Image (cartoon, rainbow, N blue to C red; front, side, top):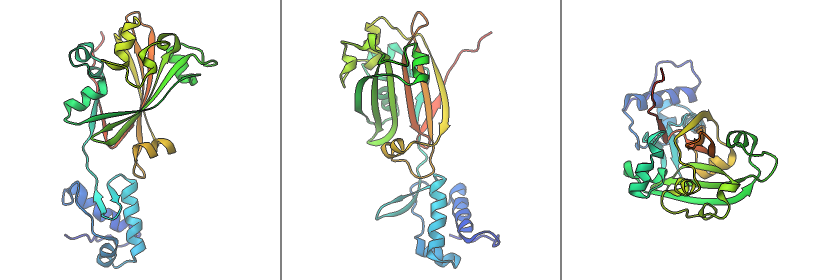
Length: 259
């Protein structure tokens, strides 16, 4: 395996990073393959070991490699878990299976889903949520449910869901386990049948808490999906902020084309 490059004028750390990146792009280093050690990279490029360490840091920030404590540095897997924007909310699907949208998506992709409920409380919602949910941003007008989602025990997304307090009060929505169909099953019982929705999608860097929960490698961004559910009367009844690992998530949408 030839890691050398002819462009000697670049910084030594960048020459090493470019050479390794080229091997990954060409498929000579595959997902899961172990990189040469810092000592070996330094020897091959006739540099100091800390120069090789800096090259690995650059590759890590790009999300191309990941360090495993005590084992070494490996090319990152490219597998993504997909979120189907329209199909995930199918009423027929949850009535037939009893599964929530996330559990149904993971089952389709051969993964074991796990959901960790981190908090459930009545709150004053942030302004962007209050505006979409059409509730007061100045009083505790919403229920907030915070969850962490895992696929085969790998952290995949964190979700914060807001529901009008008047719809949530006295229901299983205040409990960690909401029953068949999840929150949408309970909200249907309150008279809200989702007929359409809106997803607003942004790319950004993670907050400290998000990065910790998602176990994000350095330099990997997140995808934020701000979802609003609308009922049969066109009224918003639920707003969820999904924060996905960008290196593990894919978004798929089917949509009609208007005249």
